[in-house]
Image (cartoon, rainbow, N blue to C red; front, side):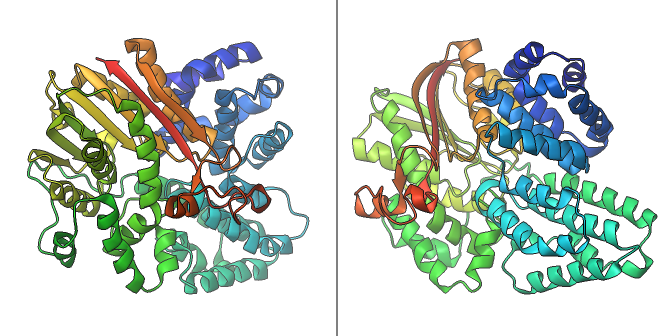
Length: 517
């Protein structure tokens, strides 16, 4: 890969700084969106690059988000290939530079660092599990990387202890079996975990270790293609279900539609396990109980971020004919919040077309049902694909119409190429375009994806920035569930205040801009 080959040629701080400022998203795509067989040949090269250029990397300006993101990316990449010495060095550098480390990488650091006694692998079990549970619920895009890291932990314990102290390896298997039986941690349900805990430790060999490492690596590749894309031209919409009957009885408004999910989620057994399956709310949903709990738990956060963003386009419409594209639409929450916004402010807008794009067929059908409820647009198109699989024909909009692109909780998701997405948009969406981009503020690696998206439009099409707002857990208080329900601030309310780690504070990364393409 040319981008990585060019990176490996750099040996000076200034050159590296310039390279990262121009190519950070390309580096990410190469490291994490490439096929395993293509990227594995670079593992030892990246490890050598870090070891040989330690001084240059140490002297980077880590107040620049691109540089901090690069360091975390390299740590994440080397963790996957078990380069523990370099990984440990990067984590220590992050600590010195006060760069936040994800819970998943903290867990990796616990088991990858050298242990004097094998029993220490067992002593850290609960802490590793707790950190990975937090990563799954609050930080990672879905469970597969959490599963991979936990599998790496089990594999390392077995590999390091089976020959001289097999009781440790057997004990770790027993601990995982007990955790699985609790039915609390969704990331333990993968078949790779089942394989690991049923290995015959007594007959374990180096050949088994090599096969297992390949199995772990293939786990990532298989998960990327987990959901098969549909290439249908017919509308996908939910029909003849208890939910469709429930929807008929409520008014077309976000609050009343959400109330159905709130009510139905009250009768769901093993709720904590299902909540774990949602990850931080960006996992592809596959069964109905997830739909209810997702809408209940994340709906108000979606709405509040979107309402804030829509304010910046309040006066931008004057009898416009509009095409809406809802990217990674889920249950079409962004679309129905936009419909509510139009109704509330009586905006002079004629909606010509709504395109709903979503890889989960279950979500897409419900999203189409929600959109039709408003009777705002008879021309609704459903596209059951991942963003990287979209074709220009999926985005047939009218060049004369204003396009409104809704990116709600999607641009920060590390499952698709930002540059590929931009190429698709710029080649198909001629004319006036508004981009509504809202996401939670998770970390600077994910935030850079949103910044890169805007920067490309600004550099090439003179995009006009209309709104730019960021609120992290540790930054200035913005919103929380208490304020949403009571319409009052709660800086000193338990779990929103700094002394309790701001646990319940809502975060946002908002970017709204206009571009003529």
